[in-house]
Amino acid sequence: MKRIISLALALLMLTTLFAFTGCGKKEDTLVCGVTNFEKMNEKDENGNWTGFESEFAMEVGKLIGMNVEFQEIDWNQKYMELAAGTIDCIWNGFTANSSDKIDGVDKKRSDLVDFSYGYMLNQQCIVINKKNADTIKTVADLAGKTAGVEGGSAGESYASSVTDKLEKYPAQNKAFLEVKTGTVDFAVMDIVLAQNICGKGDYTDLMIVEGIELESEVYAIGFEKGSELTAKVNGAIKTLFDNGKIAELAEKYGFENVVKLVETIDFD
Figure 1 (tube, helix red, strand yellow):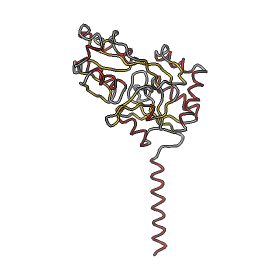
Figure 2 (tube, helix red, strand yellow):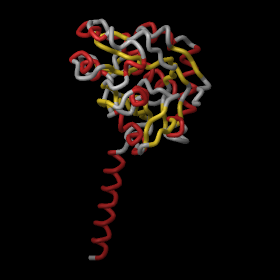
Figure 3 (tube, one colour):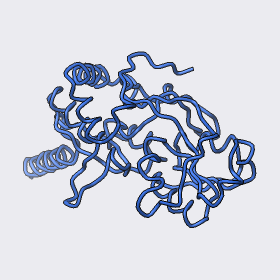
Figure 4 (spheres, helix red, strand yellow):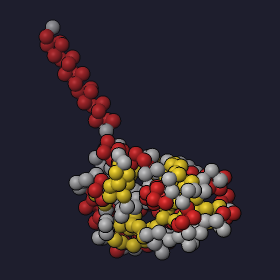
């Protein structure tokens, strides 16, 4: 009887082990945490991820010998997703030289994750409805007005410094609709996204406020502190800049004027 019980317990332990192993991430798979970001990370009509960032990640995967998968996340939860191991990196127009409010305290992102080399320059911009062009021209005009931002973004960080009225969304795209309908007075978002949307299609009535120019930013990929992936991906990024593949992808998606290899990012 004891042998039967011991055998049963052993089988149960093996079954449990295989169950956990099967549910875990494969070691040869790089899971990238993303949000829907036009021309960067977005799904085509067949549900496949496309865009500059998506193709960039897949090219990196080829060089480091890993399959690439994309996991759509709530941007507010990006650090929790990384710490929990549900994603291997944050690869979604992630501004390296910025900060996030953690438990009410501003913390530099470089203290929270390890960053890869920078690969694209960006800056935040102010998007408004054209009908408000005469009333929102300067930073001072933003005070007391309602801002629409992606929660946990560099845009939220800036908006909170100019107004105390914020509406937060899980992705930047949502803010365009809220500015259009007048739910918010302005949105703060990445200029590489805003330039592709404002004044086009359903958003012909939206514009970027040219008189408000914010500080330059650098996009990079965020990894868990101490991750060996950072160095591997850096090597691949350098190769893709050297062999012209980054330039090819940038031209394909209209980012040829903003891609740049930044090996040393100023986090101050």
